[in-house]
Length: 156
Image (cartoon, rainbow, N blue to C red; front, side):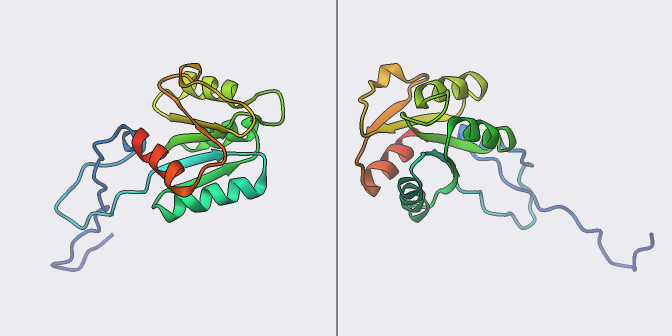
């Protein structure tokens, strides 16, 4: 392939590596002197079987600057995580349909993806933080935007 005289070959745009563990899991290149893309927003996977509750939680987090993914069950959440190594926080209801509840999901996620932070919630079950693996936290329902956003930010 011929290049015109004085023309430069296109170079890939570099992405800076974040200091947080959350972003270190994503495949990124070191920064260069060329134009640098902004860092991606932290990604939170919301696992909630009640669609309206899931949508409201996603909206609260998105309004605060987070990216979100949604799953209606533990099985669905595990499938999502298989394809998304950039998830930083798992925010899950404790009471979920199917074989695996939120506590078992948290344990499975911690075993397979130990850098993902764990935040569990429930309106019917009270869970102690010591019952959640890897310094996970519990946020009782009902919660408001400042509580969920504050809890997620404190974990990152």
